[in-house]
Each structure stands twice: as structure tokens, then as C-alpha cells.
Image 1 (spheres, rainbow, N blue to C red):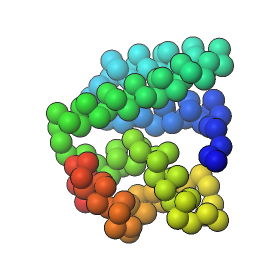
Image 2: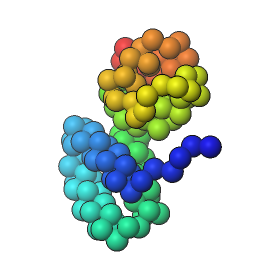
Image 3: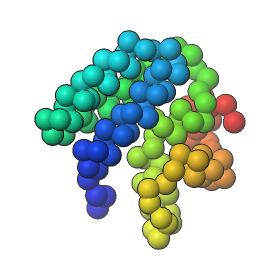
Length: 124
């Protein structure tokens, strides 16, 4: 069974996605998510923080559907939890948490992860 992320880890994941939103030119969305994240984190409201995380992912996915080419870094940020879970399942004794650079290397070197990334429009 996977361990539950702490509030700080959820906040940090949202921060990574906010950086991606800014990089995509979605500054208003980024500002709104960042502002509400601060409030929910102070309250200790896990449900709302997780909702913010999913909202950020949804906005990025919608943007990438309209602009189908996606960078490897964006793909890894969007799918960080799933990638980490798949890698830990394959290599249980691997050190955690995996960095973005390590996850990118896994995507480039593992055929299944590589195909998944390509199917999502990643430029590799």
C-alpha cells in the first residue's frame, strides 16, 4: 500500500505544476491556484489541496490537448506520482523520492514509459 503524501508534499507538487503553468503562459491560472493553495495549506485542508493539484493537472492537460506537443519535463511533472509508483513497483529497493531528472531518465530508458510519453505527445 502506498503511503499518503503529506500536506507539504502536496503543496510542493502544486508548486511544480504552477511553474509549468507559468511556462505555458497561464499566469492567471497559476496565480489563482497559488493563492488558494496557501490558504488551504494554512488550514490543513487536505481535500482542497488535492483538488488544487488535480485542477492544475487538468488545466495543463487541456492546454496540451490544444497544443499537442509536450516537453518531457512537463510530462514528468504531470505524471510524477504515477511514474514513481510504477518505478517502485519494478524496483522496490530504489531510493525515494525520485528527482525530476531521475524520472526523465527512466522515461527515456524504459520502453513502456517511453511509449506512454510518446502517446501523450512528448517530444523525445
